[in-house]
Amino acid sequence: MRSFRKELWFQTGQRREYVNITHQVEECLRESGIAEGLCLVNPMHITASVFINDDEHGLHGDFERWLETLAPEKPHSQYAHNGYEDNADAHLKRQIMGREVVVAVTNGKLDLGTWEQIFYGEFDGKRRKRVLVKIIGE
Ligand code: ZN
View 1 (cartoon, rainbow, N blue to C red):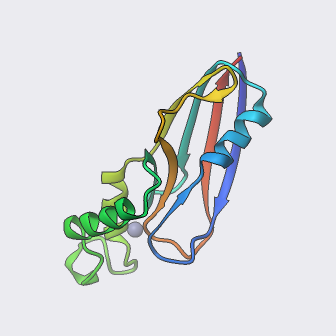
View 2 (tube, rainbow, N blue to C red):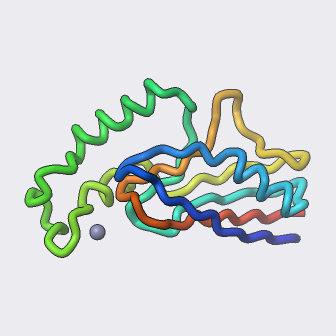
């Protein structure tokens, strides 16, 4: 069995942002040379998500409004976690949107459904953060 590991770095311009990272993960897969196996992608941070969904602008706006309903950023004072930090809402949003994705690797390609795209979901951005890509197989 072969194993490949790479860290991707992101710095979003906004506090909350969705970045389509499908091509970067495909690039990792090419680099790995693995044809059959599994590809794990996860942020190495507790205020960001990696998830799979549609690359559709309206849907991303819906995510933003839905998450702001469930865990509004402000007022910061509503959260016990805030004080030294102001990112309690980001921890909660990440929890809902999930930590990681695992994608099957088949014939050297990510075995995604027609509309499936991999996203980095940032909820406390404007700083450099890492995403881990781990691919195992042969
Ligand atoms: Zn925090």
